[in-house]
Figure 1 (cartoon, rainbow, N blue to C red):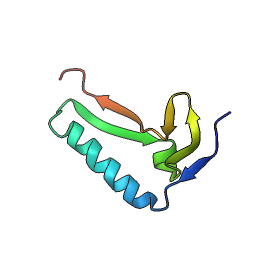
Figure 2 (cartoon, helix red, strand yellow):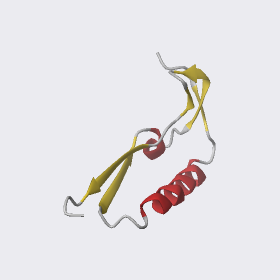
Figure 3 (cartoon, helix red, strand yellow):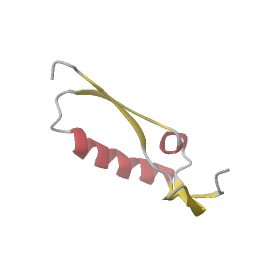
Figure 4 (cartoon, rainbow, N blue to C red):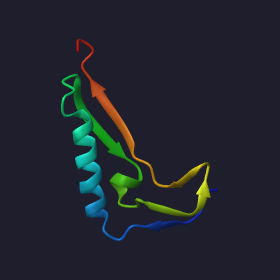
Length: 71
């Protein structure tokens, strides 16, 4: 069972920072056609666990990249 999570207060700021980070990762990758984020970042529940859980201290970014096979 996952431990309780301490949710960051300003989820909009968390999203903007994550978005900027992800955009820098894919900006020169023409094969990337779409990026989909889900789970805690998309749901506004991004934060830190009260205790370590499966080697993680808190939320991660769940991301799928849809790419053009030709590239």
